[in-house]
Amino acid sequence: MNSSSDNCASCTRRVYVIEKVEANNHIYHKQCFKCKENGCRLTIANFHYHDGELYCPKHVPKLQAVVLTPTKKRVQPADFNMGRL
Figure 1 (spheres, rainbow, N blue to C red):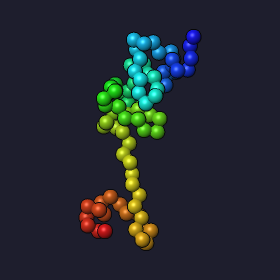
Figure 2 (figure 1 turned 180 degrees about the horizontal axis):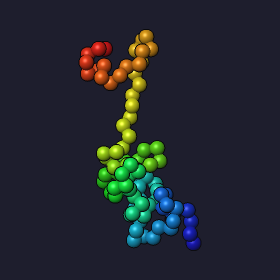
Figure 3 (figure 1 turned 180 degrees about the vertical axis):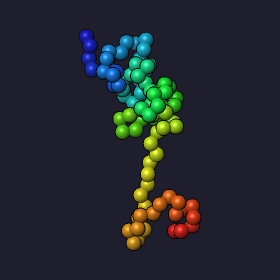
Figure 4 (figure 1 turned 90 degrees about the horizontal axis):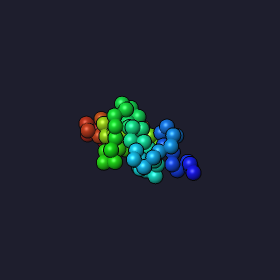
């Protein structure tokens, strides 16, 4: 019986035990377990999961913090380094 839990989260085709990678409660084919940005193969030790997509350490999106001053002026990351706050 083929259930959706037996299907690859990337290509949706059936995944057999010999080619299965499990990560973040999803199942992938080994060849589908790759970085969204450059397509490099990932491993359980080096993958990152962001907004439903797989990334290698080099291409994982960086979180952008937004800091507001009391005047509601948007502060840029460079302002912290330059001692402007």
